[in-house]
Every structure is written in structure tokens, then in C-alpha cells.
Length: 188
Ligand code: ADP
Ligand code: 5GP
Image (cartoon, rainbow, N blue to C red; front, side, top):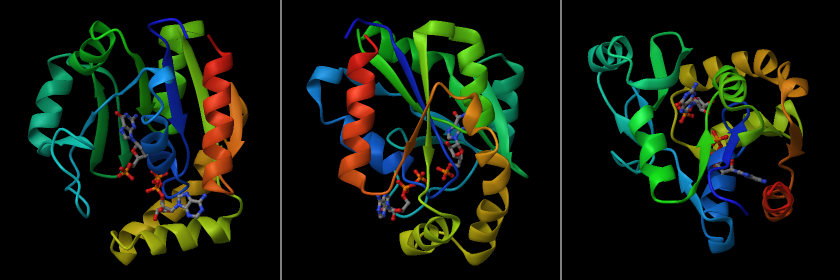
């Protein structure tokens, strides 16, 4: 695969984006570097600063947004912001790697607008709403109120699926990872 590709994975929370990305990062031939986003939410479970996210305060987030430090950012949930740092895109591309992003649907479509054919946008679909709810609860890292907010947003997010380059159903994790891996390899 040639250098400098941007792979975007978007989906309702709990569908399995992080699980898929974690597995894809193990394939050396894909030469992927993960774009570590900044967020104003608190770490969940064993999440570490600089690994899953750069965890910053709401104030620092706003300050960095005003300073123009982000390629894109969104208030994905009321009061909670997430964004792709310009420095992160540089870090990965300057290392000669392809960039893989786990970002929300609006952010994903904005990246496509910015980068055109250099970006491949993949929408991950849950097998059903019931299974999505099971996965969110099964993850065991979010309070009930947070789970409800995420489920409430799922229909809105799913309505953007047709605007992505490709849609993949995350039914069986091994199968979905293989489908995405093949798509990325074929997109060289
Ligand atoms: P996201 O990053 O989209 O929010 P996660 O990767 O955190 O989602 O997955 C949510 C939960 O669902 C996790 O507990 C994960 O282990 C589980 N999960 C992911 N993919 C599958 C799958 N194909 N089948 C069953 N459970 C899955
Ligand atoms: P979570 O809190 O479950 O890690 O992520 C919540 C949502 O924020 C997910 O839809 C995730 O894809 C999105 N997200 C994470 N990082 C970014 C980012 O940098 N930009 C945008 N627009 N969304 C992001």
C-alpha cells in the first residue's frame, strides 16, 4: 500500500471500532499509525493519556480549538468534545505511516471533504440495535446515563452510513476485521 493514506472508521459508540482498529494495528503490511485524538471526557477503564486519547480539560480543549490546533473537532455529546490534532496527523505521516482514525460521523465526512481520494471512509454497522445495546452494557465502562445518551444518538449516526465510501457489518469480529483489512489492502 502506498504511503499517506487516511483510513477513517466511524460508527455509533459500542459498535466495535476500537476493537477493529486494535486488531488492524497488528498487521505490519498495512503500515498503520493510530491518530490519537484529544478529548474533554475522562478516561474510561484502563485508558491511558497518549494511548487511546489525549485527555485534556474542557478549557484546554476550547483554547486549542481557538488556536487552530485541530484538523477537525466536534462536540460529539453535549459538553464533550473530541478532535484530531494537526500535530497528530504530522506525527504519523512523517513516520511514513498510513493514518487510521476512529472519529464520529460528522468528523469522518469532514475529513473526506478535506482529503478527498487520499481518505477512505468506512462506516461500521452493528448487526442490530439490540446487539449494540448489549455491547455498550457488556463493555461495563459507562454509567447508565452515558449509555442512554449514546443509544439515543445511534439512529442519527446510522443515517449517515450511505454517505461513507464503504459499509461493513461488525457481526463476527474476526470476519469484520478481515473485511476491513482486505478493503484497505485493495485501496492502494
Ligand atoms: P466502539 O469503539 O465502537 O465504541 P468497542 O470496540 O469498544 O466499540 O466495542 C464495544 C464492546 O463490544 C466491547 O466490549 C467489545 O469487546 C465488544 N465487541 C466488539 N466487536 C464485537 C463483536 N463482533 N461481537 C461481540 N462483541 C464485540
Ligand atoms: P468514545 O467516548 O466512545 O471513545 O468516543 C465517542 C465518539 O467520539 C466516537 O464516535 C468516536 O469515534 C468519536 N471521536 C473520537 N475521536 C474523535 C475525533 O478526533 N474527532 C471526532 N469528530 N470524533 C471523535
